Image 1 (cartoon, rainbow, N blue to C red):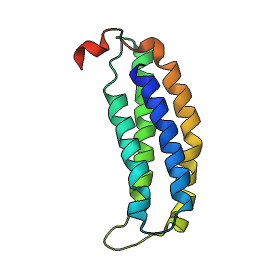
Image 2: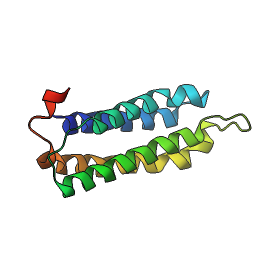
Image 3: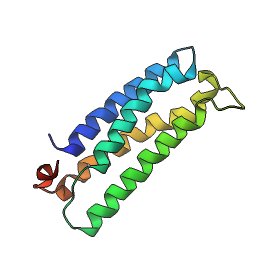
Length: 124
């Protein structure tokens, strides 16, 4: 299993965790802890994928990285800050689009396969 396939599997876990989290009640930090951790792992995994020197592959992984960082920013945007507290019910409209982005990201990760270096594991 290459890094893109593993990232796709973890994205499925993230999607399930986020859907389940949106159904829970309680402190939002606790509810979103699992999905945020999984998404962070996906980001680190994608950032560690070694590509062949191809402009299309580099552009493609850049789009994936940008989307993943935007998703993390959306989750961080609903977590408590000093001046405000948000409930999961208030956060649902901001989190729902993230679930819709997962299938597209998984497709992009599948399309990344031809650009993954066969020697990438040597650098780990």
